[in-house]
Image 1: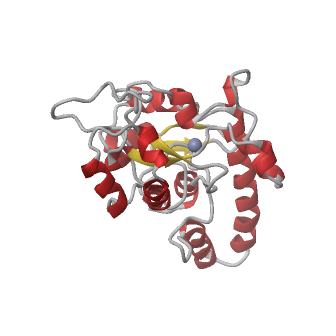
Image 2 (image 1 turned 120 degrees about the horizontal axis):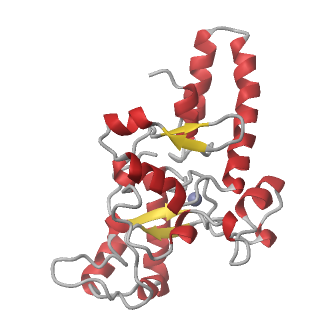
Image 3 (image 1 turned 180 degrees about the vertical axis):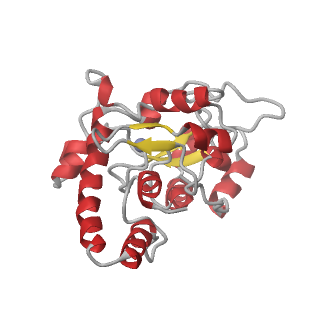
Length: 251
Ligand SMILES: [Zn+2]
């Protein structure tokens, strides 16, 4: 996942300067600021969850993820020289609901199977921000801006949909392998729910790939370019963009 450098929305900036000590709930209760934040933050990842790369769906499977925790509603952790992480633009990323989306919001089987069913009783389905909770991410989770699409640090296993660390890619980018392993565990990126979702995408891509393969190399290259392209709204059409580029892109 590459994070795009998207300027802070004016409304958020005004709010932040006027209310430097604001809590997350105070921000959210200002619907103009909250709306501006939501429509702008999602551009940072072109529509994907910053951690699992599932495609986000406004209102039903999309929330703002705080990389550094917002500490409930008390903002207890900031002081002189420390930003108020609850409302700091650089700390706000688009994330999925970690498997806790509500079944009633969906009609497609894909969404019901792969976006719902996680809760306190079914923790193994919890991923991303929901799994991460309020832990201090330092040394446990990679800062989103330190990853990129050109050299994904995970390899995809086509047999079961799991991901594992690409040690060479970590070395090339000076990312510690402990940190990479921790990323998978702390965000539960190998939950069965995500493995199944990746497998389903991989099998539909495989069919398209095999068709293109009957033509020539150019057809394949065009196909992969299409998969990774942004649409007219500057959003990805497909999820799991790092999986696609690590599996199919020729560097
Ligand atoms: Zn996610």
